[in-house]
Amino acid sequence: MKEFGDICTKVRFLGFTIMKKNIGIVSYNINCNFTNYGSALQSWALSQTIDRMGEELGLQSKLIDYCPTVMTEYDILHPFKNMWDTDEQSKRMVELTMPAIRENYEKFEQFYTHRFRRTKKKYNDNDFDAIVDDEEIHSFVCGSDTIFCIDEFKGFVEGYWANFECMRDNAIAYAASFGDSHFQPQDYVTLDKRLKNFLAIGLREQQMIPYVKSHTDVPVQRVVDPTLLLNRDDYEQITCPRLVDGNYLLLYSRRYNKAMEDFAIKLAKEKNLRIVEISLRATNVDRGHIMMYGAGVEEFLSLIKYSQCVVTNSFHGMIMSVQFEKLFYAFSREQCDNKVIELLQLMGLSDRLLVTGQESVMGKIDYEQVQSRIGNYRNESLGYLKKALTIIKE
Image (cartoon, rainbow, N blue to C red; front, side):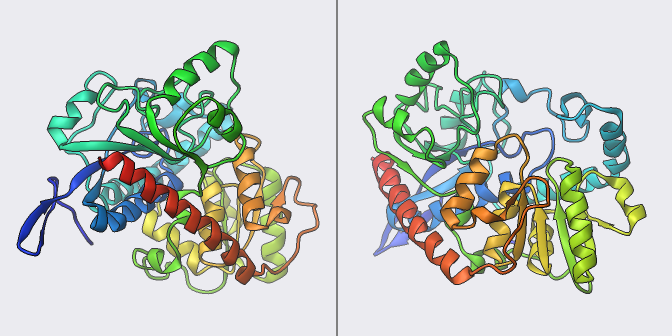
């Protein structure tokens, strides 16, 4: 497993020693109420991409362990207080899943510690500016994920909007998402001020681009999620060996959806597949499902890679299914559907989105066409990121 040092890397070139500048990645990842494969993978993909570009630009990524005030009460090992679903059955499912939650947490900690250059300590809204000297951070990249969603975080998170003294006019945004934010008049006043903190703004979805372009004088572009900047070969390098023998359907649920569960059970029966499930529905083991909530990031990739098909309501569950060219079915999650709809449109796969499970869906996916579409958007996004890093490097 590759490990990174904590200090800037010195590179020898033609007899000269060049010190690479640390670019701090600020995103929603380490501090949350439940671990999230997508949050981890989008941060990893962005760090990998920055490091590759950094060979030419003299830059390297560093993952910032940032815990905003709004997240100080989040606790992965005690998630009950901040759960979305507060009904007794959901709480009971979490209680039953706690052994797997603890196992999963430890694996994520290993991933964040050994797959990144990570800050030596956790920073919050009170001491963030100290990071420049403590960690030798030169500048910042905010993104990806729904870091611009004020509904999700009950307002504007200072670090996500580059609103610390050390970040203003010293940060870019990459694939930041507004999710399904609902702005009030006063929110737009704050938004206009926060946008001025950035030297370039890359947004993951099209929806807010017209507004942002009209209220800033910096480059603004739609870009793909960082996980699409890499390709299958990149993920193969960290994917662990097969975990489950035989043919199976992977059911990956970010939030319980009975229609999705029923669809997966029916599909598995039709295709004579076992069901491997990543969810909090611990009692599904009694239905013969192989429950895998304890899987780490590398194991998650393996479960997708070796599956026959994937049923999910996860944004990044869809992306990784596409990366491994799997037959997949995406279910609406009610919240943040905009990002799912736009992603499927981008890939030309809008027909894969299901609500009831009764919809008619094409069987096969023409991945040659899908990869061609992604390739075009990937190249445009890489072009944006390189230009943005060049601006921030000065």
